[in-house]
Structures are given as structure tokens and as C-alpha cells.
View: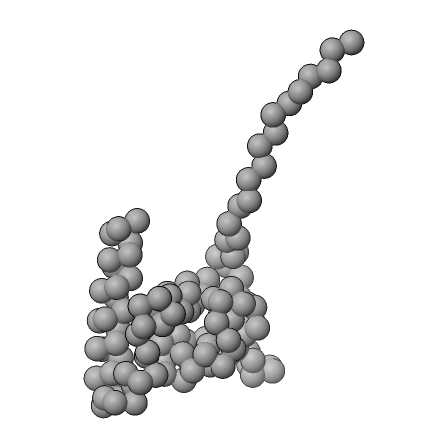
Length: 114
């Protein structure tokens, strides 16, 4: 009787959220690697638009919103861009345009380099 040695390769797969699902605030904050308070600040400054539950009033986030939160967290943590200060120092209508331009330039550079 021969014993066969099988090479089983097991790799860790990156978690990919279901594209059709929505996630509550706690889960979205966890997936974006940022505190809930920061997620709410992003909502307040309209960097992310959550879905609001009509029955209970809670926020939920789809895959696109979670990806946006992840990009915002990267820009804040690794690039030093503070969106809250950007909104406080500028006119309300100009801040999103300028901050959005800076963010889109950095995110675009990330995608080009990958």
C-alpha cells in the first residue's frame, strides 16, 4: 500500500463584500478600518452618502460607499490629507470640489501605479 502525499496549497483570500449587500455603520467602519465617528464625519461632510433605513433611521453602506471610506482612510492615514480641516477653512461649496480634486488625483495615481 502506497501513501500518496498531496500538495495542498491553501492561501488566504482577501475578503470581498457582497456587491448587492448593505452593511450597518459598525461593519462599514470595521471594513474601512476607521472609527465610527470618522465614518459619521464623512457622512456629515458629504464625502459618503449612506442609505438611511426608513423604519429605524440607521445608516447602511453599500460596496461603493465602503470603497470610498477605505480610500478616505488611506488618504488620511498615509497621505496626511485632513478632509475635515479642508471643509472648515473653505466655503461650503468650494471645499468638496478642492478636496475631491486632491483625493481623485491621489487615488488616480494609486490606480495607475498598481
